[in-house]
Image (cartoon, rainbow, N blue to C red; front, side):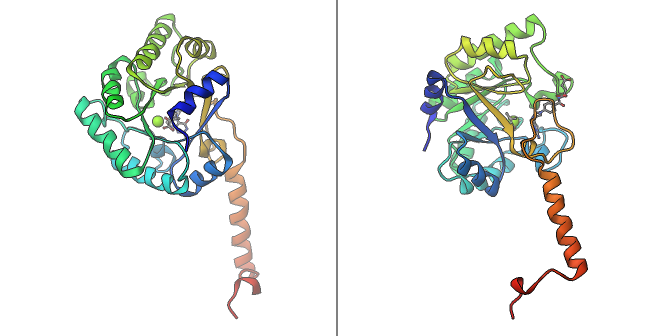
Length: 263
Ligand SMILES: Nc1nc(=O)c2c([nH]1)NC[C@@H]1CN(c3ccc(C(=O)N[C@@H](CCC(=O)O)C(=O)O)cc3)CN21
Ligand SMILES: CC(C)C(=O)C(=O)O
Ligand SMILES: [Mg+2]
């Protein structure tokens, strides 16, 4: 079983950290068998699994449901679960309660929450309660309406300064790693060199200590994806081919054959 120490050691040794965001039993099992360092049960489940336009409606119950399934598929993996929108912003007390429920009911190793200085007190409290916390800066999708859409962050000097400061504040608050989403690669590089905890990038270039992608994105299940997604398999095409074979064989009367029949 990997622990939070694995993340710091990987950074020290210059070994890239591999994280994949996924939501249920069988893809979690594939991730564990393939040897990823960390599985993220992302609130992107709202978009990928529920077909929502944003992650905003996702609930603590949803995350616990997904977390339990992922833990069953990946019993030996380091699992991080996203705290959904408004499960940690209202008060530190609510955040501890919700994070505690997520940890107790799923068997996760850590939680992730979005934001910088505005969540630093919450991070401190969670860490002091024994709950490891991963940070998330740059494009923070739970603030999509405040940001005016899913836009690259850290384009102006002012924004860059703020994100760098936020990374330092999160590190001081006790996070064991920080996701950097949709920021210019030179900014991600600067942050990665500036802080001691590892950075895990998505749309943040190649200089971060690790990379994360959504399982269904990299497997090619979506027709439209952000620029940062690389499709390693044409999953939708492959699945459609399989499905078409089933349809054609049933219509032609060639399935089920002898092999698939109890005689
Ligand atoms: N399937 C999936 N993959 C993700 O990576 C992901 C989610 N869902 N849901 C939560 C957030 C939302 N994310 C997103 C969603 C859209 C863009 C996007 O459309 N970006 C455009 C515009 C960039 C710009 O104009 O600045 C792009 O072309 O990359 C980026 C990140 C990343 N996360
Ligand atoms: C894209 C990653 C970092 C995430 O937060 C998610 O999957 O929800
Ligand atoms: Mg998320």
